[in-house]
Length: 156
Image 1 (tube, rainbow, N blue to C red):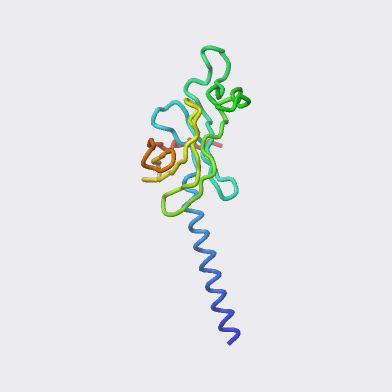
Image 2 (spheres, rainbow, N blue to C red):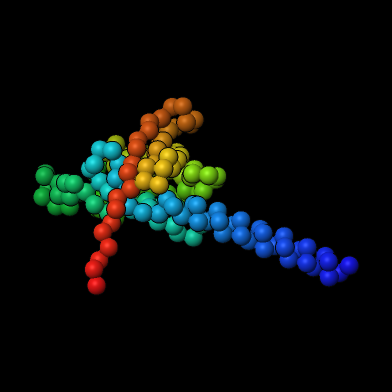
């Protein structure tokens, strides 16, 4: 009887582990470099521990025409952050994979107005994200479509 119970528990444990690993593989499809529809920036999404974050890795206009220096987060409500360069700035924070093709519980920061919004990310296909930023409930928000960028592999 003990051997039967051990076998049953082993099967349950293996099944549970396999399910978690499969879910991690699905969740990690979000990792990559994405371009918002406005084309002004490119955002690299990466996994840190069990959450997903995105930072600006490219700007169409990296130099501020007024200062002739790299663009900074001049609209940030926190005065101390206004000198932080936009390139490298983390605009997506704390996303968790909730179910098939959806990441929630995160926020998105808009450097053009200095506001942070609740956000949901839905993957509509392998190369397309529907990003929905909102205040309060999702009904009161704005959506954008981001496209995955193909990064050329380096030849050896």
